[in-house]
Length: 210
Image (cartoon, rainbow, N blue to C red; front, side):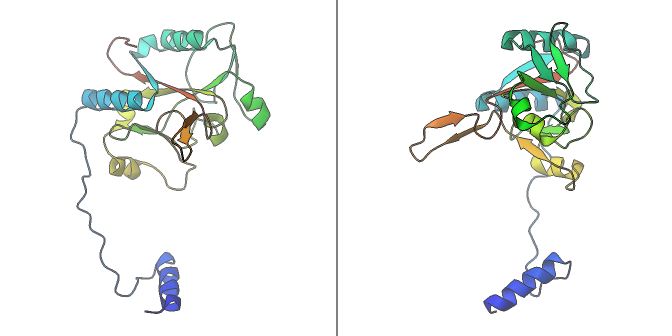
């Protein structure tokens, strides 16, 4: 097949037409982790810690106090709380929805609190899809501190499980630990493509644990 024929075949395939002579894609990968909800939470917490994120665990009734403790340790005075996120911010801390704020204004706040669409335990990944309680993508990319509130029942084991639940038409943001990169000499630099500090609160039935 010539390069031209190959290119046209790819176009036809993208338009939904079967590609001539295309091999069937093998689907022998794992589709489920087979872990309990508690095991998924433990695995996610372990992966997040490996990436340098801080993880807090609390019961639903302790969420307000856990958020307050996280913000107090951070010394936050102004945070973004997207519309639809049901968290209580302590008195004395200014909160704003983040809508209409410029990049410079977002960079000037002490942090952002968001929910999430789901989390993937095996890869230690938090996924945001722009739904209520998460806000627009810039909110989780520009402020230097991201505090993510995650329910225990939002944790899945593997990427195929996550893909089955997510809408590919949504503005998906996949977060695996704080933002970091390294140059050719492997010198690690944090905060280049997103927040330098990621903190995750896993809300489940157990007692608080930091």
